[in-house]
Length: 309
Image (cartoon, rainbow, N blue to C red):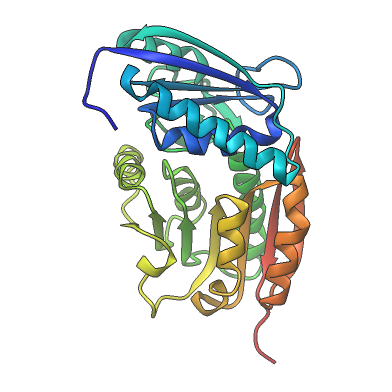
């Protein structure tokens, strides 16, 4: 990371959409700001292409490009589509960076009832809307990416199912919370519920706290870390995890002990090719598939942990 400055190097990485989120995650560890534009965002990239835009200090340029190339090599070996890669560079002023965000992040509808909006675009609101006020930070999650939208759509449907079962305030857990958007959505769906959100990145949890404050969400506890940061005695009726497939795989044997009997887990951040292998591991851990939902190159799974006996 670098100190605050007014001039940045903007590096645009045009790649196949299948590898976009992986490259964005790697770049985010080095860059001071990341944008991801693909067919699932509000503003479309070129057809069949995705664009990762990194704003980075000039002295961090070589480190970022080396990390991207190393990631590309791993992707090729794993059979993940990434080529051709086109890289463009230019210098950008901080004010221009802010203006770019304002061009590409606009109020947008997600699911049946949610509207996600930044402070500069109030959108058109109707009485039935559940509004999420969200200003972009370095944390992932604006509602523009398919993986985020899939979770919101599944959890919105789950709220209807649980309401029919008489559950109006399930305890929920948001793993890899990023901007906090999923916790805010859950708090809108279940105003009386208590939740917890965790992320390994301290900047993400700080961003999530700002967004919780912005949305008057007071019932969600925040922690920096992994599942181990969650108090061992807590059991959750709903778990949301929009994270990379390898992290989900590692979670499979650990999650059942943190869930209430009959609890639901919504898993996203999965490329289509990863959905079945991840599902297999969670089935081995005792989960059963409730539904799968796909959008473009992305998939999300809703799983249930049956009660013993």
